Length: 244
Image (cartoon, rainbow, N blue to C red; front, top):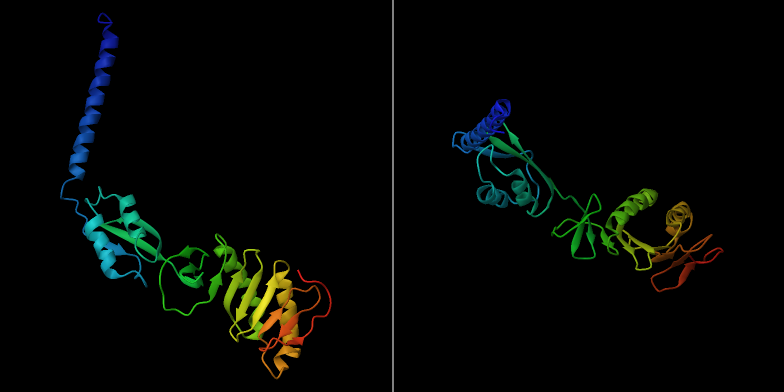
């Protein structure tokens, strides 16, 4: 090997090149850590509705470390994601010498089992609000399904002009809704939308004209339904068919 001049020259060139790369890396790392590249500002893309300003400022002062080039974007994003009401965060460098933070907040859509909330994506999150919201009473991992069914049922109920104030999904996956006028509709486990459509179609001609308000309607029949007055008396008997 020591007699092979070309091989020696190639080895020396490789070592020289490696040393040069290491030196350049060290110099670049040193320069990037200098105070001449300060992080001057952290900007929010929009003003938050729910996240307190003081908590955002605390994250900026305690968690955003380094200069424009060395700041850890993943750490910054994680710190913001732990703030209340925050659903998703994106953080990016923005010239000159600042960070832009986009906070996507949860938008409360319904209450979930009395102590949590459901957002507009059907996701459960743990926050408090004074908003008047419909109540969802459901089983684990069904919040997104209930949000979707709520939207469908609400469209069907538009002609009645009574919105849904509570929707329940039992352990046997039977559906029940309570309307703004206090009426409870039992929809069962199958053909819920068809049953609801049929009920809305006949409501103006039968139930809306009763002298006493109907409190409970059982729609779990193939070709009809049963309705009950406040004293439990059956007001309108079902036509035919079996419960389901």
